[in-house]
Image: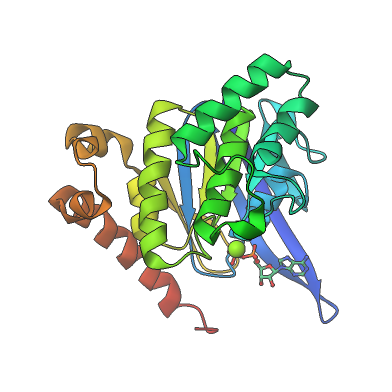
Length: 266
Ligand SMILES: Nc1ncnc2c1ncn2[C@@H]1O[C@H](COP(=O)(O)OP(=O)(O)O)[C@@H](O)[C@H]1O
Ligand SMILES: [Mg+2]
């Protein structure tokens, strides 16, 4: 069974009294514990896809399901990480991570264990009692990711989570997320417009067309990553230098460039 499934999903929005088609018959599945990245030109409907999986938006046609159930509202079976760090400003790092675990009804010992585990994995040790305003953007986003992973949801939904970070912080976050994701496989739908980020992180990359967004191509990255042993390299820049990586990146760039060329708004 697919953990996340978009089945013939279309969505239009009213604009100036007309219906504008934003997503056109998108079908896409994410298997259990698979990490899928979506790349596509801005405005092609990536965030709309994410909001539909989160239950914040609905298809005009077709269905979105998570763990076999049609999505009808937001729920604790899905954790969302957005570009803007959506932490509770009045809660400490510890309390931010704890909040969802309490809501899940876990006992205190188990919550403590999980929080310590993810705080360690996300390099947040020593900051347990800090408040979000005392942390850099990168650290706030680490808390958001730790919180999402600790919940162990059916689906993790991340919409450009590193989009607001500076380039150096972004690279460190990519390395940390790779470590976390390989050690703790989860079902992840990850949206980015950064091609390298998608290839580095994902098992498969979905390329979308410009608006109306359709699935243009889906590339299998995982088999190449494993065959070429990318995970032997600790640093992002070393992986990004490998011929097998460069080849995939260039392929996706070319595919996206065709979309830009055909879009009158660019
Ligand atoms: N609630 C809404 N009402 C009207 N138009 C919307 C709404 N949400 C998104 N859109 C339009 O849908 C298109 C796709 O938006 P979005 O999903 O944010 O794209 P992306 O994330 O790929 O950049 C854009 O043209 C945007 O203006
Ligand atoms: Mg977006």
